View 1 (cartoon, rainbow, N blue to C red):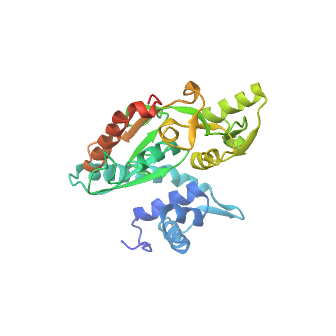
View 2 (cartoon, rainbow, N blue to C red):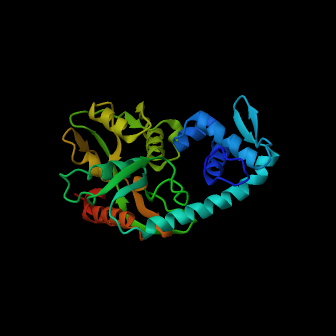
View 3 (cartoon, rainbow, N blue to C red):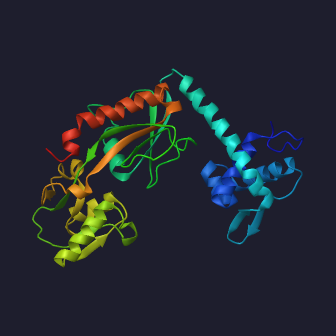
Length: 297
């Protein structure tokens, strides 16, 4: 069906675009989220409005678009349509026995570093052949029901959802510094990330000892680079820093910064061949690398 059809038949693609604009607040942001140009988004929204007799569904403001009364009335119905379409898509994917395609995993930065280290042919346990692995690093777990990702490897399990959840293991962190340096200064996260366990531990230690923070960076790779350069000491994942010849561990792993990690998948997708293969791969990796991840070797 053509997206410009105004004969009264509803095009699900236009409903999907309507939901994206409602959630992201602008044509441009919705286009980025869906990988569609802004003009196309605008045409699709106009077609969606035309199906309902032509009233606009959004109020236009300088800062973006906001659902008006007519649009807000359609929102829950469009979400029900989305749920049904996504359920059909998950069942279609689960029915496929072909070991090919792309599997997207939602990860945090430590899990991203760990899994990325094992994707090459030099790994003792590379990903299954025929499957393209896609890692999406975010602070928030992707919405698995909406297929924002097929799997998630996160350090906290979700509290709700039709999900299969399995504990993978523990990532330990310890204090490291460049070999030969004696600086008491610290490398840590910016203050807006201070609610996470690692920066919270560092800030408490700074207050108690009177030490200073020499450098702040919003992700672990930048902190690792700074610590390797001698900027100060900081908490790093043991599985990375223990193998770095420029670094030395100052003390045993810090219990407060250890993170349990969990494998999460929507139950509808658990039996899909590609997803099952990647689940098995991730679980095998965590099992074989358990001691190194825990900082025990």
